[in-house]
Amino acid sequence: MAEQIMSLYQHFEEDFKIGAAINQRTMYSSEEVIKKHFNSLTAENEMKFESVHPNENEYTFEISDKMVAFAEKHQKAMRGHTLVWHNQTSDWIFEQNGGLVDAKILLKRMKDHIDTVVGRYKSKIYSWDVVNEVIADEEDKFYRDSKWYQVLGESFIEKAFEYAHSADPDATLLYNDYNESNPAKRDKIYQLVKQLKEKGVPIHGVGMQAHWNIYDPSLDNIRKAIEKYASLGIEIQITEMDVSMFTFNDKRTDLTEPTEEMEALQMERYLQFFEVFKEYKENIGAVTFWGVADDYTWLNDFPVKGRKNWPFLLDENQQPKEAMKKIIAT
Ligand code: HAH
Image (cartoon, rainbow, N blue to C red; front, side, top):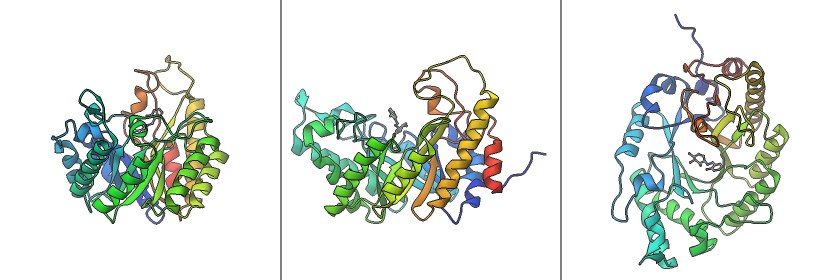
């Protein structure tokens, strides 16, 4: 008989939700471990702009509806990802008469999108990643140079939050980004959210994507980022956590399984992360992994196509790793 282990989400029930990103395949292939270990779900791709709104007058909700029904059936909370982003967004929204769309029309299209998507899942989705990744990675630059920014300037950010809030006044609305623990980027994210709050924009929190690895970022920088965001009196969610076995610049492709050293480091890091999350449980509403188990992760194609990675607490056989057992035992 398989060894019994307590549930990860039940272990943290008093602290924060434990989430997983699911897709059309993993929601079925991992159904049992999802039921057992997670109480919050995010669609990995299926609610993104290009998935639900391929043409101006065409919304495609078949798959996202299935996911919401799956969450309801298993009594899991559901997060929404994502409304306004520079990636995986249909080209038509930025086009008009063969050129770049004008500001008024782009804003109207954005409003229609947000009204329709947020409205459809009103009271079924507890929190939305309203705006994703608008801060630049370059230290000397504040905003990312996206089509949203080119056409609307920074104003699209507050508009997105206002539209989302009127479509579902009860949803927790987040600004979501990666490299969120890097001090320079952290300070820009902080400035952005602070300015929005001061203007009275309905933003309720920061999503720290947490695409981390077994070496970076340092625990100290993670702690400082959480502290800084928390000082704004907003909610923090860890929205897309994974702990890669490789640093971002390590492009090696020779491994068919993780080394023992990698596994040991990953365990140590996971234990430290969850200790910090516990410390800040008053500020943290949910900790979501960007997948379920090591049998599927987007990192198998990013940043190196076709390279295996093992970033989660459940292994390739969807069995708990030592790290998971230790987390549950503490
Ligand atoms: C995230 N970006 C996105 O929010 C998520 O929607 C996607 O499925 C995976 C990761 C992280 C990211 C990126 O898109 C490009 C470079 C670095 C990090």
